[in-house]
Length: 194
Image 1: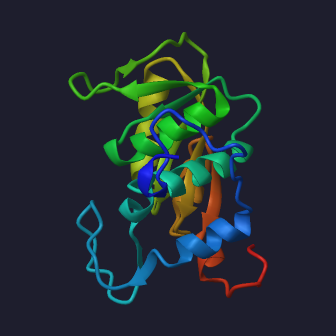
Image 2: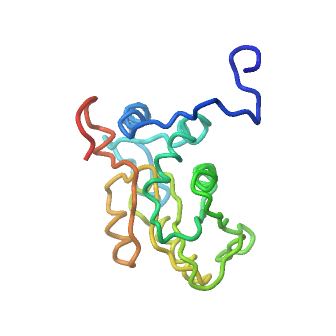
Image 3: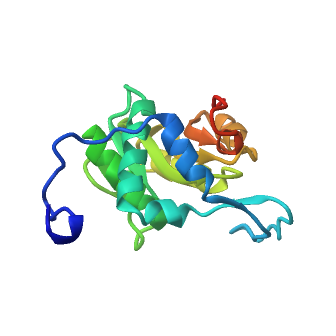
């Protein structure tokens, strides 16, 4: 350990900590707060809806690593690559790629519909999202992957806000695999999730 109890970069603890799903749920539950907000599509304000501050998760390396360890367990065995289309999800996708050993495809901002990374036609891909709300962003991402020649299997996310995203994706033949739902995060401590 370096001075001040912090690890030096490039060093690993003797035994990596793998949290239980319940431990991570309890930690993330504090990041779900009440308040009005406006969705990217312009809908809202949402009044008494809850807001999950994904940046509180995505900007904390320890929490991000623990989330990726658990997310790795829900990625389909058929998946050959991970993909990401949004900047905020890139941190989560990178951590998940490191956990799973799956290569990552990155959306090319300068050429919409193109992805950087190694893949060929028919490559089975999971799109990584941080939070899925209505599913519009995830659907656009899976359609872009399909147009690029990949086969999107699922959207893998940290949180499903249970606002129609799973149904929208299912209508396009894509599954949603979420580590948590909003209901899970609202569960009382000790109450089993789902």
